[in-house]
Image (tube, rainbow, N blue to C red; front, side):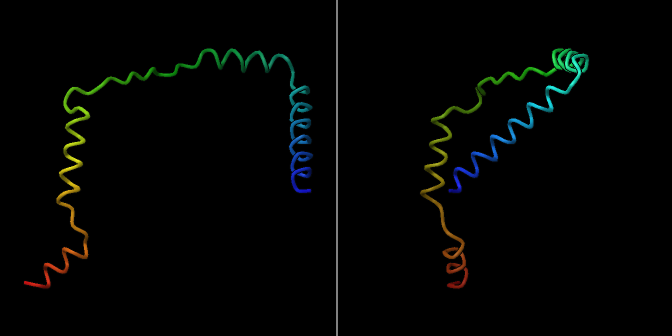
Length: 81
């Protein structure tokens, strides 16, 4: 029952949106199309860093896990002394 209600609501929304789009004058549509084509979007290039490779990062992570202590373990060591 709820799925059919949702489907009806979506269909009504789509139909009302297309009705509003049909009312828009052709001149404003052409202006918005021209504005969209003249937008300057910067190009982003992603290059690999040569400073650290995957093996170095993996070795660092393994070393961290070997020496990791929880906050509770650190507190216990402090209370022992």
